[in-house]
Amino acid sequence: METILVVGGAGYIGSHMVKLLLDEGYAVVVLDDLSTGHRRLVTGGVFVQGNLGDAELLDCVFSTHKIFAVMHFAAFSLVGESMQVPLKYYRNNVSETVALLEAMQRHGVERFIFSSTAAVYGEPEHVPITEAHPCRPTNPYGNTKLSIERMLADCGRANGLRAICLRYFNAAGADPSGSIGEAHDPESHLIPLVLKAALAGASVKIFGTDYATPDGTCLRDYVHVCDLARAHLLALEALGDGCGSDVFNLGNSVGHSVRQVIETACRVTGRDIVAVACDRRPGDPAALVADSDKIRATLGWKPKYESLDAMIDSAWRWHARQG
Ligand code: UFG
Image (tube, rainbow, N blue to C red; front, side):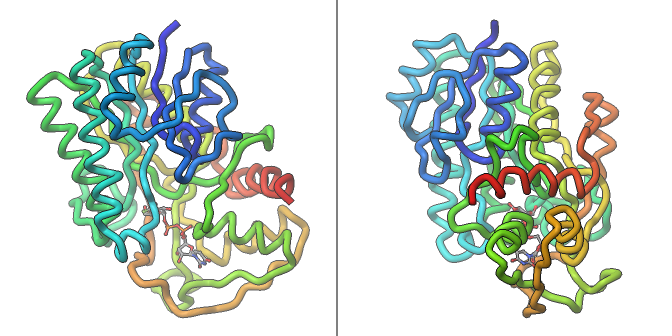
């Protein structure tokens, strides 16, 4: 049984990864400092509370467990916050990742799967966006993710690290069991805010209604968190088979507008959700849609929950339980 170290395994996407790995028979060690994650989202495996930049702790983890591969989900990911306190992002996302890679090198672990983001592309020149699209992030969050991608490529050339970078578009949904899901504090993402508004009988803001899109609101490519986790599993198997480093987009290649998200949530929840048109949120591109042909062709990824209804339905099951 191979052991996978999931760094950030108590977060939204990491916790779904941990559940899938356990279901697939892997042994799992979770390292998370719980700065944004939640212990209750970790459904099994060995839990170690600590920071990914703690060299002593990492030495202890790598000496105690024979780690086959590392999956790295532990990042700060609020674009707006990254504009205000960039060094917090460079410290956590970049410096601490250097410490993790150094520890991997000390212990001879050479397989790495990295949570990257569509934010590495910046304002798109065209959609759908392929992996060959120029990378020009427009905020510190995207810069930190791109810096790590470059660092991984350098390490690959220098010491044989094999890394797969997965550039997520908009992660959405929750495990169908309703037992784990998205729990950010503060919450800034559209779907959880819409569902919270449905629960509370409150309104939701639409940031911008004058974009050059069919209904004037932004288009995003939502991808179910369980499909994201499944892509990591395929990447893990590929690294196990000896494949080299690579970069893949992860999205469904369909853009849904903010208004469509709200309408779908009304239908799925059976509740009225009042939407209030507001000014644009600074830095939001009009449309972000992935071309994900590469991962489909190379790793055989095929999303299971492609419809927005399915994503919102699973998220609703989780949010409704939270009260
Ligand atoms: N939105 C609203 N009202 C809200 C919240 C969001 O109208 O209350 C809009 C946003 O303006 C945007 C869309 O809903 O047009 C989606 O916004 P999210 O905050 O849910 O997601 P983003 O597309 O801004 O961000 C996501 C990831 C980031 C990543 C980014 C780019 O959460 O980590 O995609 O890939 F950087």
